[in-house]
Picture 1: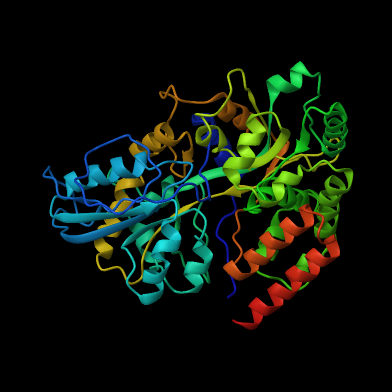
Picture 2: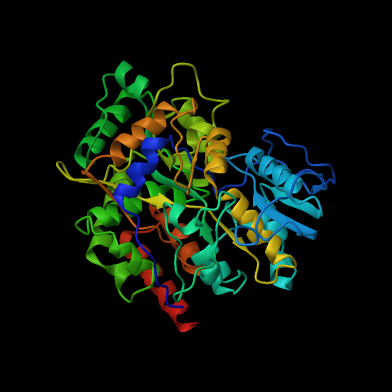
Length: 475
C-alpha cells in the first residue's frame, strides 16, 4: 500500500510545545503480568497501576453540550475503551473515563487495559468484534498495520470540522499532524516525543568524562569508560530493538543523508533500493564500530526495557538509547544524585547538527465499532488543553495538543534540557514514520542481530530489501 504523509514535523512547532512543557514519553513495552478482569465502579482517580481492568461506569452528572462539538448529551449504550498500560501508567485514562462517564451517564463504559492488552485483544480485532475506541501503544500495537488491515474508521472528513469540548477545531490544536494513508486519516497522534541517548551527568562529572556532542567524542569517551573498568559504555534493550533504532540507527541514517529526513519517508514507502543506499550503509557501519570496539554490554542481547534501564541506573552502563519517558517510568528506581543527561543524537560529525527521531502513540475508532459516536465524542473530550495538562501532570510526558503548561510545577530538568535542543537551529527533527508490521519486524530482528555481532551491515541491508520487496508484492 502506497503511503502518503501529511505535513512533516517542523522545528518551530516542537519548540513551541516544549517551551510550554517537559517531555517524557510513553513506553512501547510489556511490563507486568495482568490480573484477572474485574467489573467495578470507575471513580475519578490519579492512581497508576499496571493491571488489566475491565471497568463499567454509570455516573450521573450534567451533560450540556452541542452536537457540533460532541456526539451529544443523548449518548447511551455500551462503550468500550482499549488502552495499553506501560510507562505512562493508567492514571490519565481512569480519570478521563470517569469524567466522561459523568458527562454521559447513560453510557455503560468498559475499560480493557493492561500491559499485555494488545495481544489479549488481537483475536477480537481479527474476528470483527473490537472495542469502540483504542489507544494504540505498546508491544503488539502498530497503527500502520491496523490501517492496512482495514481495522480503523476513516476520520478524514470528521477531523475537518470536529471541535473539542471547548469548541475549538481539533486539527488546529494538533502539534503533529496525522499521517495520511492513501490520502486518508484514521489514527490521530495523541503522544509526542523523541528518542535520544541518555547518561548520568553527575557520574560523568565525577569521573571527568566529557559529555559527547558528536560521533568522534562519543567514541573517545566510550573508550575512556571501557578502559576505566567501571562499567560498559553502552547498553540497549535487545528484546525491543526499536529503542536502539530510534536512538542510534535512524539518527545515523539521517545524518549520513546530509540531514535530509526524507530518506525515512522513502523507507516507509518501501522505495526499491532504499535499504541498500549509501546513507544506510554508513549508518550501519557506525553501529558495527561499537560492536567491534566491544563498547556494547553483552547483557543487551536478551533483556527488556526495564532491565536495561535498571542496569543503566545502577551505573553498570554509561549510555542508553531511550525515549523521553524513561525518567517517569523509572522514577521509583532513580538513585539519589542521579542527574539525567540527554542528547538527541551522537552520530553526527564534529560541527554537525543534532538529529531528533520523533515517536508518537495514536488514538483511533474501530471501523466495526458498535458505538462509534461515543468513541468520537470521547476523542473530542480528551483532545483539549485541559487534558493536555492532565496528561503532562500524570505521565510526565507531552501529548499532541498545544497547551500552556507553564503553570504546572511538574516540569522535569530532563524536559527542560531536551527543550534546549529543540529550540536550537542546530537540531533537525526528522519526520515521523512507521513501517508496516512485517517489514518492521525484519528491521527489529536485523538490528538486534547486527548489534549482537551476529550479522554484517550487508546482511542487514539484504534482509531489509528482501522484506520490502515481499511486502510490495502483497499490494
